Image (cartoon, rainbow, N blue to C red; front, side, top):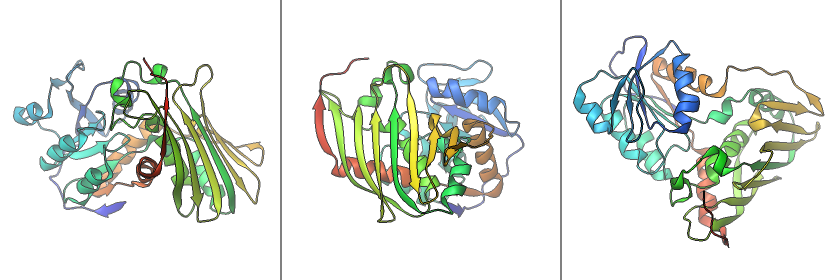
Length: 316
């Protein structure tokens, strides 16, 4: 959703940024992308468990606010539960806010953030910035989609080592990576995608699923299936296949590679997170917000109608 917002204070260039939540995704992706973008200057970090050298560090956002340090924007990389309070407090300071995916713990809290007047709010979907996504979207805009399948299988121990919160209620479980596939799907397909049914596999004693099977439909015509699994060992797979009247389209490696009718396409990109920060800077400059919740709505619907099954206990 792009919408005009009430003008905020004029910020100097570069944009003075605080990074909130210093975990694996912040270190692996956000910090390098920020460092490479001249539109941003990282001036603060907020984390209970880590510090960033060379910037002011705080354990809580309230401490950052109380410090009087001049901030223009914050990027939130905390787990989704509890993020609404942090985002609302930051926007109340007049700070622009970027939300790591998923944008929150519930649709209602993110919609409340988006409805409130204030500075830029950016619900980011990094997989939409994968190199092959624009080519896939352009091809599908000119064809008729007849079916699609998603296979998104990765090892939770490799990508989320020791992160118990992800299998707790509100952590989304396998939908933490699965929502990346849904973000691509809702970006590349013209028209509407809705969920019909789901099967959610919860490990005994856990509050979020470790695997899921979804049945979806595109424009009330094309059937789509999706298989998400957090227990994949060996080669990891992040693949989407779309059948069309002009031949199949295949996205591999989370959208980085694309083939159309069997022919590999030449694609290029600056990287998912560098592209996100470039977009965040552009939204701030244009005084706009972008809060598309289509992928999150599909996940919420899966929890609403999904048949629950139970698997053996899971330990990291």
